[in-house]
Length: 502
Image (cartoon, rainbow, N blue to C red; front, side, top):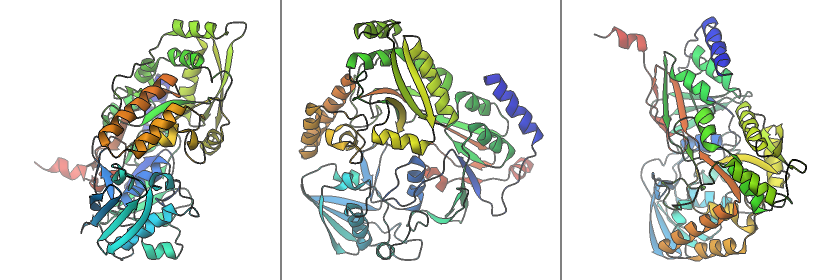
């Protein structure tokens, strides 16, 4: 498989002539899937969120340990339920020429809070009772309850109030105040943005097939790509002349979701058997890359709210067989479960590896691959036994409520497995109502320990980030959460000119 794919790529790359840079000098970024929505009030997919960070300014961002830091605005806590945000001078000119003011901040969050808007982000800011504009540079947020983590929820890109009032379609014609402005979105899914400081254009080109994406990079039809490649393609690019590659540890959490209402999967012993049947380290070694780390929690170890000391569900096929026998399963009565995945070739390959490993302990896993939209719709509706997805860019601990509280079943949250533990509900509620950050950390860690014990999902890994670019592309650095912020510094050099210099 590996040698055959590499040989195919070599042959094709030799046959295909290299392509020149586009006439407008755009730097072309190959992506696995196009963005879905460029309105920050609605964007949920990773590609949309990463592009939106370039198009819009947000009040608050995060440091390396996922602690909130000032971005567009600094803040003061005037009382346990009263926060004042003061807008900075930089980054306050919208792409249509208007000036960003406190009125725009209020209009953006009023829209998110309005039930008629239907924003999926409403729940994360539902504690806001009132927003008051003090002057053009100052806006106050009044809360329903104390929340020392409140600034970390204000990460939605700010929209111009006038365009909001006029019903502007931000989803496909964004107007922000970020370092890039929107240029166009073609019918084939190609999105073009332009860097405001020097008018350098970046073109996001969706190429679903990983092999084709690599070939386009070798041929010069795209200039750079990030992630969504199997290990052998990453290793192949490492060895290619004219291609520069980078890796770094990531924080995106991949897991196997479980339908806890399924009569077999509702039993913890069965879930343990599945967890102990999976050889995560072997999958990481041969499929995912050296910077991928085994995971135990939704928060990576460097996150300030992570729970240290969670005991891994180690690979132990004999223990898995014992647990299955204890649960009443065996050769004459095997455990049969379904697994849904997208039609992405890499995800299908991962699913077949998991299927083979489970088969070795006596579990029959029936695979079904569908387009991602169908799979995701089935997952939200509870029409699954097992599935695998990744949480991308997890920063705020409010995700614990969103994923594990019994009231967060879709469409009210992402408790897709229908988990119901009154103790976890109580701890989440207590954390949300505590005005002590130290107490919240204790509660967050306790919640993670219970969820880990209950095996609400099977934790897999924090996948590495991989970047490859043609040798004339410089200035990119991989972010821990995989964002595209380094595009602010990317540039193309003249390789031939550089070589001629003494």
